[in-house]
Image (cartoon, rainbow, N blue to C red; front, side, top):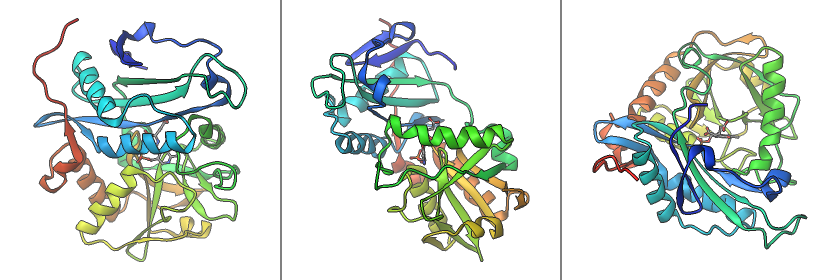
Length: 310
Ligand code: PPE
């Protein structure tokens, strides 16, 4: 990964190489952490964080769901992130806030283990590659089912839950595919290993509803809004596996991946990225980079007084 200079850790700016934890940190053993993936883009108004407040709200929600008291509020984390981007001199970056049970107590009910919070920022290119964004990816339905609300919390973005995504992604990658698509316990389509999913059926965009076993993605919400504003009908409903194979178009959306077309699923070709996918992708890219007036309210501009030195 591409290093930056500083990481914000429990209220302080720490040199990248010094931002360390004890090997007996609770989160390392049990996955007791919650995190976010956010992106900051270079715009005419300066570096701008896409839907920062919504991401910080989801972080607070994930923490609440896992009984992790956050020692810093969203405003503090927002301010720290702005300062961190300035100090690192970045114009665009990926932002990773993480709150986890730290060192101090072992066992499953470790209420006295502190909740540590960090924010890291670094340059991170297209998650599935630039070629994937242009040409689309080959995806494979995973033999691993998406975590179910009967055992975990699909709507929380929690560290331990990602073992499920990692199994799916590893299986797909080892089989020569670029991404996995996870089904729920009854075979309904959920999402990619780190992205939400849309298919086009008879000209309508279809995506699983927000109460499905998915992460209630912020890119997903943004793309729904953009599609509707462009006049495309959008329906949130269950999707059958067979619909993946028969879709006119399909694509994935997520913060790290952005909007990535799917060109093949389980060896059923969907073809080159279709028109609806391409139109929405272009509009979404414009929104991310502050080129659409009506979506400027989604951007949290990082004011640039002058580069701070310490
Ligand atoms: N589903 C999952 C399981 C998921 O991890 C993400 C984001 C999404 C959907 C899309 O959510 P949103 O980013 O709010 O639109 N995945 C993050 C982590 C990826 C990683 O490998 O780390 C991300 O895209 O930042």
